[in-house]
Picture: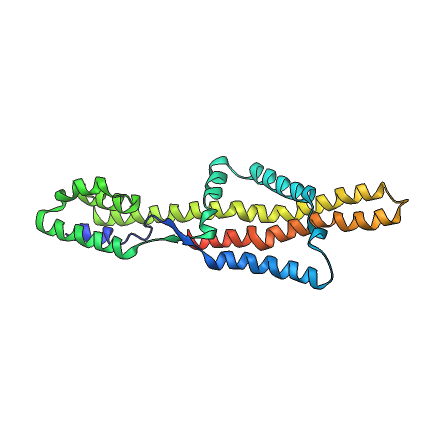
Length: 231
């Protein structure tokens, strides 16, 4: 009985499912953008002043391309899949899991560990399924604990690797924004004879820097932190 209750009662990594929208994250993005754009308007600026398709293309394309070079495909795809965890609160029904574990322990006490073999195949959560399967197979308690702790460690490492996709993007984004600004200034230098065009061109060229720095600090880096928190 001890071999059944001990490993199964520690499913620290039950499978998470996306549930309701995470209003805190959504509100955070809205407040951040609202504060920046609101400040622009209060300074008698216009939203059209920072609305530049080419700047967005340079920043997004350059950043994503740099991340593709930096990250293995499997990690990159995993990171993109974890993006839903930023805006949707992962739901884990711990109470249901514990009730399931107690049910297994009760049945094992009455009918023996072998009676749980069929139930093990029907468990959806991979962590709990592995724990119960090891117990049914008669694996030593200490070995079960080591295996499950290793499983948790690997899961945490995967979460950190997927979060690094966004950390990496957050590091590249401001630099790509500067590249966009320099490219804009190159175009400005072609129109030095027209002072009006020069002033407008300089203003437009720095939009790419705003996009790069804003994307990194308002979304990419916070997203990495959030993914680590829920991993």
